[in-house]
Length: 380
Image (tube, rainbow, N blue to C red; front, side):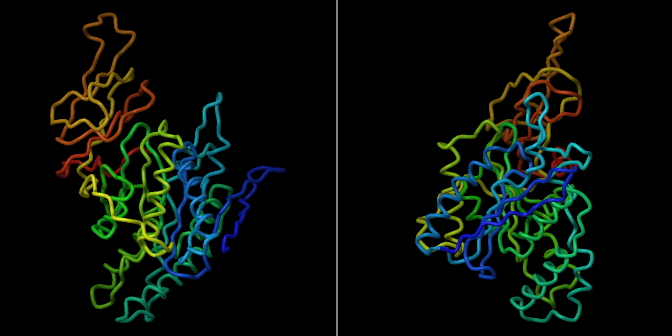
């Protein structure tokens, strides 16, 4: 067996306390391909953690049989800080409570010093270029200097993932269908991932806004390729993706064990695990631009009363929900309708039905880019 377990201690946030990351490693370090998978950087995303648990069981079995042919790192709980944040027995894992912001925004930018570090070292051989760039990225990640617990979490996760061929960041939404985020340069290469996990919407954006975890590892390659031009081949050598495992309530062995089996088959297809994954499932969707996704936001406070089911096909002008003001004196004037601004289908809805002005109440996946960029910068 090749499995080892690493505990990474984070910077102590207060005297007498510390938290740790747990990373499970499979295969011989340095073997290619390398995959990095993590669950629940937003710590309240319980479906992702359950998927990771079932995947670990499958990887343990494969490892016992000598079937791990690449290198796999699995972090089943990517955010022990967020797991400790509760108020009145309600887990608050999306934002860092000390003011650090969204756990999946403002990740380290690995690109600024990358061109200088590889200058004069790249040539016409794409494989050699990949090795050189990965070495530079490892160097950059190794120089990160965490000043507090939050930044030490980011530094540790960055170092684990920085030189991977595949980076999968496992999340969930409020109420949602299975969906997937990628950069355009990885389509249709990643169509096997989309089909295998049963993605109902696969959304492409070169920059989705906010510098999320997955784009930390995919965009240095694409930015360097643009900077150097076609004479110096720089492949998009890190397939980084965010997988949204439906909604928070979709947490059960019956749902998430098949999700783990799908990831296992994907890793088989990509040469990390021996064995026949079987035929690729028929895809549910083609990829669409994230700029075609409309984020419906409530302009007022009130209670969301939905008029369309999750997954429903809608046309521009269809009422998706009404916002009820429970203190309205006249019931006939108590509800404000919110209509779709595009044709498409309702991909997400809000789990908690009381909203404030500006809160998202759903996302509609369309086919054509919207006039504004509201599809790019989603929730904070």
